[in-house]
Length: 325
Length: 309
Image (cartoon, chains in turn blue, green):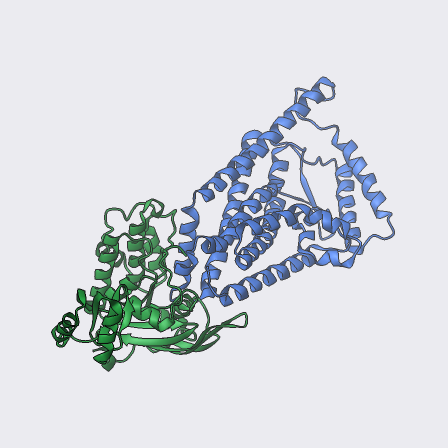
C-alpha cells in the first residue's frame, strides 16, 4: 500500500500544475497578508490625519468604547426569547469576557497586531481547499481521460487499494497545503506586523483565563482542515463516479461558494442542519452560527457522516466499474 | 505440440450482457504455453470485451477466466500476477519519464528491482531515451515502453490488444519477431487481437475467430488445408465446362477460376485446356489467405482495415 501511495505522490508532483498550485498558495497567502498590512497602514494614516492616534500607529479607537459597544450588542441578543440554550451559553461567556476586560482593564489584541494575525491564520484554508479540490477532482478522473486507467487496473492489485492510495494522496496533499499556508501566514505575520500588549481571554470552567493566541490559531486550523477534507472527498467522489475532473471541480466550488447562501435561505427549516455545506466549523468555533441550535460536535458529526457516504459511493462505483475507456 | 501440455489460460462459459444485450455468449477457450494465438473477429464481435474480461478490466456476467489455475474474478491478485497487458497505443503517463513510468508499474508487482527494470529497458532497446518524458516519444517508442511495462514481472501470459496499431512496417516486423521469440524461448502464452489479418497470419500458431459474441472457429495455422490452383483461359465459359467435366467445382476469382487441386494433375489439365482450343493465360498455385477464410467464416462481416478506432 505504501508503494501505491508513493506512486500517486510521484505522479502528483511530476505534474506542473501541482507546482503551480503550491507556488500560488505561497504567493496568495503572502499577498493576502501584504494587502492587510497595506490596508492597516492606510487606516493608520487616516486616523493620524483625524488626530485620534499618535505616532502613526494603527491604533484603533479606544478599546473600551468597542468593548462597551460589544457588551450592548450581546445584551440585546440575550434578550431574544427564542434564543437556543447553547447559543445563550456562548453569549454569556462572551459577556463574561467583556465584563472582565472592562473590570480588570485587560486590553484585547488590536485588529492589526501580530497576535491577531496569528489567531486568524486559519483563513488560509480557503486557498488550500481550492487546490485540494482541484487535485481530488482529477486524481481518478484523469486516469480515465488519459487512458492510463487500463494500465493501472490490469495489475495484481485490488481496486480498493488503488482508490485508497489515491484518496490518501489527496488528503496528504490537502494537509501539506494547509500546513504550508499556515507556515507562510505565520512567517508573514512576524515580518509585517508588530505585537501589541493585548491579552487573549477564554472562559474555562466558569472562570476567565488568559491563553496564548496559538491555541485558537491551531484549533481553528484543524477545524478548517476538517472542512477541507469534506469538500475534497466530495470532489473525489464526483471525479471517480463521473470520470470528469471539470465537473467535479465546478460542482465542488459551486457548492462551496453558494452553499452558505442556500443554507441561509433554508435556515428556518430543519433540513438546513443536515446539509454539509451549512457547516463551517471555524465560524462555529468563533460563535458565528448560521443556523440555530447547531453546536460544534453536531456539525462535526454531520460532516463526518457526509465524508463517509462520499467515500463509500466512490469505492462502490470504482470497484464495480467496467473499464470501457 | 502445445495440446499435450496443460493450458495456462482457460475461459470457461464466459458471458457478458451489457444493457440487456448479449455481447459475449458462452465463450470457451484454452491457451497454451509457448503458443501465439490470434484473436479475430469483425468490429463489434466482442474482441475487446473478451480481452478486457481477461485483463480484469471488466467483470463477466457469468463464467470465469483462469490464469495459471487462478480465477481472475475470485483470486484477482494471484491471477493477475501472471498476466501482462498491452492495450492499443499504450497510454503512459506523458508527464513522466519512461523510467518513472516503469518504476510506477514495477511498484505494483512484488519484488521487482531496479536491475530488472533496466534489464527490460535493454531488451526493448530504449536505453538511450528512457530518462526522457514519454510525451516526447514517438509512437514506436511508446509501443516499446508498452511492451516493457508488460514484461516487467515476467508474465506467463501476455494479452495484446491491437498491438501494431500505428507502427511502421519495420516496427511491426521487429515487434513480431520479438513476440515469436518470447513465445518460443520463454514459453510465454500470447493472445493477440488484431484487425490486420496478414499480421495475425505471420505471427500466430493458432487463430480463434469470434462473431456476434460466439467463438465460431479455432484452428491451427500449421495445417495449411488442401492445395488450390488458379487457372485463367478464354473463353471462360468453355473453361468452366472443361473443369466441371473433370469433376472440379470451379470458384470464380478475378478473370479465372480456383480449383481444389495439387500440382500432380495440373499438366494433364493444361493439356486438355490447350487441346480444347482455349487461350491459356495463367496457371498458378493458389494459397487461400487468412482474409479469404475469414470472410468465408464470418460471411463477409466487415473487416476494418482502418487503424483508428
